[in-house]
Length: 147
Image (tube, rainbow, N blue to C red):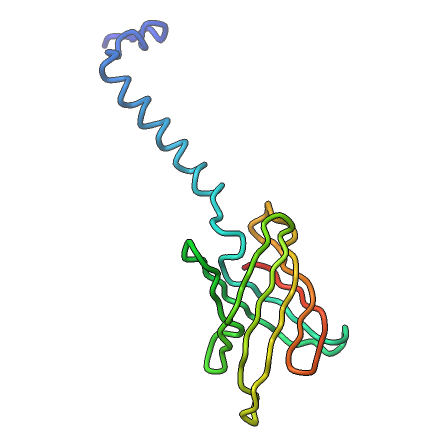
């Protein structure tokens, strides 16, 4: 049986074979780093939390937001009683948002929504959206975390 000298082993691999292997290792290493750094639009995603006029009177809330490259669209509490956003804006200089919507109450009356807030923890995937929520005649604060 022939022994291989560890010091000369690397010189036995032809450079032509080593180059594709090295390139493959670099591509695999970099491919894991790129997607984790890209979150897309800062509002895109599903946000959950609550809103209410007091700390005791809270309402669970789900907000689904989309970005098509031109406009922000979304839905308050997606499902059978969903309320689509009519207007949505984001000021990137302050990260303040404003949403407007209209839905129907249990009695069929129109309920107007005005949501004004600010994005917090912008660099985090689980960023927070917090501010003032007005729904019909009720006004309170809200806090949502991106899921």
